[in-house]
Image 1 (spheres, one colour):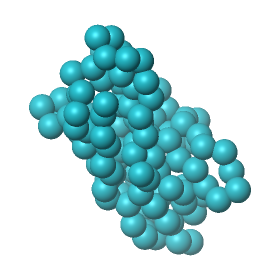
Image 2 (cartoon, helix red, strand yellow; image 1 turned 90 degrees about the vertical axis):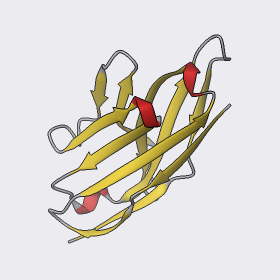
Image 3 (tube, rainbow, N blue to C red; image 1 turned 60 degrees about the vertical axis):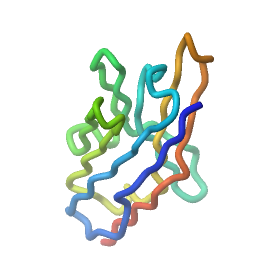
Length: 119
């Protein structure tokens, strides 16, 4: 199993920046990718960014050019640098990881960290 702990959310004015962190523990050797999703009230959870072990990234269309995902493998931590924040970025941000053999294939989620952008 993998445990995920997020930090770094908060309240920021439009145009500002935040850096989210997510530390993984447990079966980290089985991790194949890490990333972030977000969910605003009344909306479905949507992709923010993912990063595979091979270095491939995938960003949601609404954050391309503003958000950057990175990873410190030694610390088993993934980061999301959010710049030029907009009120529509307000959401709960969830860290995500998936595991592969020799562990079972499974998706794990963090507890979420709230990002609120004021206009």
